[in-house]
Length: 125
Image 1 (cartoon, rainbow, N blue to C red):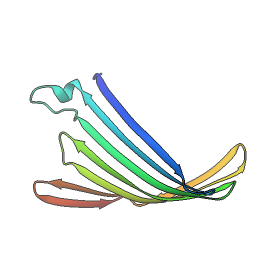
Image 2: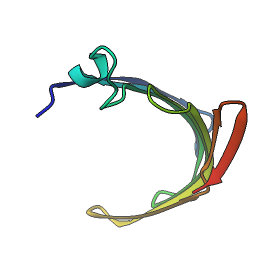
Image 3: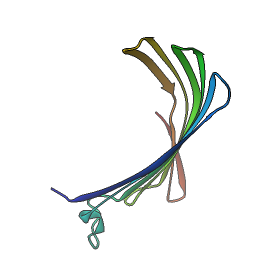
Image 4: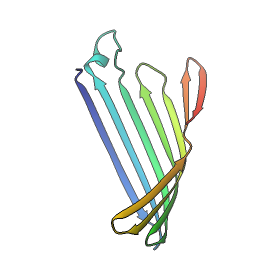
């Protein structure tokens, strides 16, 4: 086993725009390192730092139906590979037919960009 240290920080701010609409913003940072990533000259397990931010606009159609549109952005720094940037437009719907049942669905397209040795690469997930 390899001892590992993980640190996660984050925050969330919401603002009620009107009786049916809400703006929600979240930001987080995750960081992982192991003794193997600190060993001199070896990078068996990479050090990883991830930043992400999400902004969503929620509209409550009825007391049981909520729609949301938004965007997520991310940045990944990996010690043994190229840094990556990502973006993801997204939409979601949440329906609560009873007090004990919630049905939700999300959709989005994630695009990742990496830059290594002067070359750009783009990938859709």
